[in-house]
Length: 315
Image 1: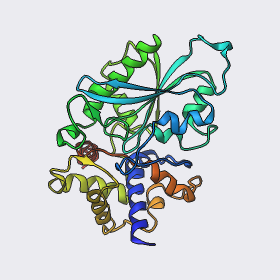
Image 2: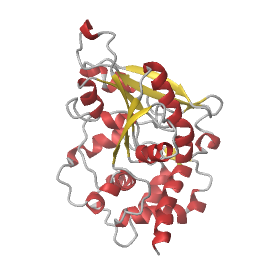
Image 3: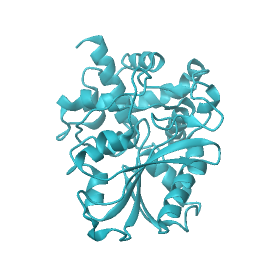
Image 4: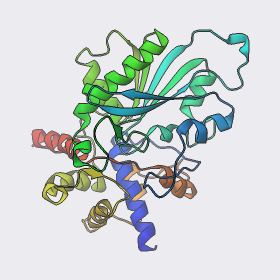
């Protein structure tokens, strides 16, 4: 396998280790999209991945109390719905992605396999959230994404600022309590927020996909090595505020992981998820065109610390 392809698989594998592995979820992906490396103009999620399938879709921007401007998409009705149901109130449902991806990750399959479109076709008013730092959420009222200060946050801030902002926005638009679906990091921030009674007045129910509160159940070689390395090499990461999985710094980090005993860089997907019945390996390149997305290095370190702290308690 060529070194560049190996590195691409390593990047995808770390993404799976942090997002999928805790509960060994699996899936297949289709579709394509431009990355946020600044080399080409990008269109919004609605135009590229929703309206082309015959669904109405709205782009919204939401400002957090600490000044970040988040992108949201709304699919208000089922495909090809006529005017006969115009004005009918539909139950709002908010979907929150995990770490190192954005809302596009829900839309890489066909409409019959995309969760937002399945929900829309079943009569829900679907809202797709995107976390700060991802390709459509790199704006701030006073900071530029090239500034280190822009990346001075972890999932604590997602709990304190991002989640309340999107909940308040959807509630103000719909005047209804909201169903919440979170995946991976989306479950962590939901659990942290809801357990403290936040969003109690606007939350109707919550469904968690690959839920995590701690990472103590992560036991694959790559996942454990990656978590330990993030904390152990914090001095190496000092000054690198943005963790871009496609950047040179992250690539060098991932390459070093391949040298650890027990990590097989030639079969990383199996090493993380076990024998996978349902992942179509021919679509890996298409997935990589869309994901992974940037996050704050501080966020990655915070997640790694939850793994470290759990294992210290087990000693």
